[in-house]
Amino acid sequence: MRFHGSANARLCFLLALTLCTSLLLLVGLQQWARQDLLVSIPWRSGNATQLRSSLHGQGLAATSAGSSSTRPSPTPTRGPPWHQVAEALRGPQSGLKEKEPPWRERAGVTPEEEAALLLWDTPLHRPGSGKRNVKLGDIFIAVKTTRKYHKARLDLLFQTWISLVQNQTFIFTDGEDKELRAKAGGNMINTNCSAAYTRQALCCKMSVEYDKFIESKKKWFCHFDDDNYVNIRSLVHLLSTYSHTQDVYIGRPSLDHPVEALERVRSGGSTSVKFWFATGGAGFCISRGLALKMSPWASFGNFISTAEKIRLPDDCTIGYIIEGLLEVKMIHSDLFHSHLENLQQLPAPTILKQVSLSYGNSDMKRNVLRVQGPFSQVEDPSRFKSIHCLLYHDVWCPPEDGQ
Image (cartoon, rainbow, N blue to C red; front, side, top):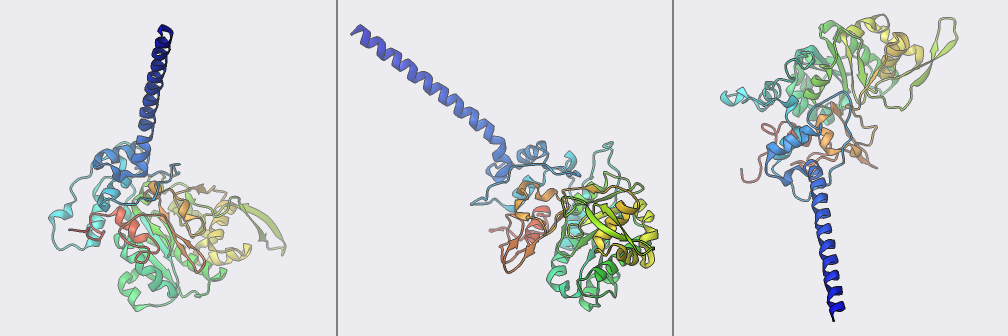
């Protein structure tokens, strides 16, 4: 009986030890997972300030020339008020506390004016951070389009991001349009190029874009397509990393290797040339200092004749002039995106950091961002309205239920 009682005591001790070990392990796993929950499902907590600090601490709030690797967030079954989601995803820019927007005290301003004031009211950089003071007026934003997409694509852009930077955005198209002219005014440029989607027509429009930029005296030339959403604040942050007097050519290649082309020479033969180029479908930016050096091959129609030497489209010709002729290396950035990539693979917590976004819709496949927002897929098939809501929720999002 004494031996049997000793065995029971020993068994009870082992069971108690196993239980304690399991509890300690469970607590440790919960603490390990807590930070991941804050990033992937930010609305689980009611403290938006705490969530913003968490995202900022993990590098999700600041914009840089590269991309950060984060774990994709799961699809929620029930979302929060959209201003809370936006606050958690946006995070504090450069760690600075936002001031009270001055438009709150003014009457008679449009929602677009409110959004623009909200966007630029907060200082972009910490004093002494080494960032250069890039102003919105320093940037020449060119949007290439064609007449058949004036309604289908441009209307969406004017409703969203172009409404914030209409004075800085120039629409390059191939036909006159009274309705578009009324919206864009003198910033609608009828290139008189062909409406066909050919190498010659594309290079014709790019030639006009280049000449108009040089004429504008602005510091930065940024080209985008009519299926891009441009995050203006991220664009300014990116350009502030560089000087417009230096040789800067930044964008995203569509290939994982340099393109190889045959360059025709005067003797009638050809030579092989390799170079990287930034795909125009994702957008790219060129500093004024570099653009001026391109002049012998790009200005006053020379761009078209240069393109004929390699028989490649406009964006390839830009890369050929910069890398092949001027021997300036392209800066590769993952912040630019086109419909050529799988946009559904872009992690949700990083979407609001990007410079440009895109979409692709066809009869066979939809290629859009995985963005939760107040607009349904029918209302917002490109997801641009939802992105705009998350960025400018104070003035652009539809009213929440009960408000």
